[in-house]
Amino acid sequence: MASEKTVTNLNNGFTELWTSVLTPLNPDLSIDTTKYISHVKALLENGSKGVCIFDATGEGASFSCSERQAVLDELIKEKIPSKSLLVCTTAASIEDTRTLTLNAVSQNVYGCLMGAPFFYNKSSNQGIINSYAYIFNSIPEKNWFMYIHNNPAVNCGAIPHAVISELIRLFPTFISGIVDASENLSVTTELVRSFLPSCMVYTQYEKDILKVMDLNSTGALSFVANLLPRQISKAITRKSSSHAMLANDLIDLVIGHHPKIPACKSILSLLHHNPQWLLVRPPFVSLGKEALADISKNLKKFALDHEMKFQI
Image (cartoon, rainbow, N blue to C red; front, side, top):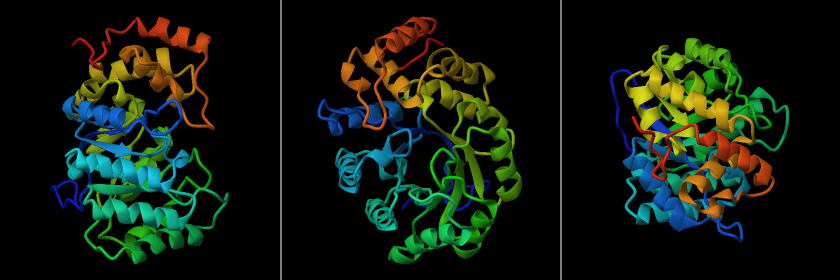
């Protein structure tokens, strides 16, 4: 994997904006690989330094290992730079996580985003540590990097500080950072206080980006960047409150009234005049006519065109 290092972000920690990619589907609910590649290229050309594939935003848990591997392989074939790819390898089975991680490492991607196996509830600290240790110890390649994913939205997704501390102690050369998807500033702040600067901490919540950047984080992972990559990039690189406010307003006025992933896909469907963007894998449900009408009405408050650009 890439070995880029900076003074403030050792061990391959990423910088600036990375986008959690939404996954476009075909009518039979298979992945529309052509549209996926086009969307990734558009993001990278419009302000996103890198992309994260198949985390929760990308409905990763709803796809098989072979589906997820096939998309990564196609991205590499299409000359998407491996250094711009962060691959979420979280799965219910540690063997599936191992398979996905081996494939990502073989493609020399920038890093792997990894949460604990999420099938069982109330796993012990030692059980979570053992799950991560199994992956680290079973990957022959030693020059690869992993981001711990703190995601309380799924079973066993909240990673205790004691677990993080022990993982950093046991595997200091592998762990590049902690990505917090809690959408709770106090949780992110406690992670920063406990682990930065020795381990970089990132937020995955647009409303907290500037506050976490003020705590010396060097970047963020964003789902709204599927819609506003340039604006969120400027919010991060310039610490621009005006650009951050656009994302906050989009969340409050358009996305926040509906389930997040179907809502974001609905916006892309409206912007691209393509109903296939509405499709989600069960257990998610596509938005109905009333919800779509509500999103369409509120979206008109924004000068957003089909190229995902605000007029600035």
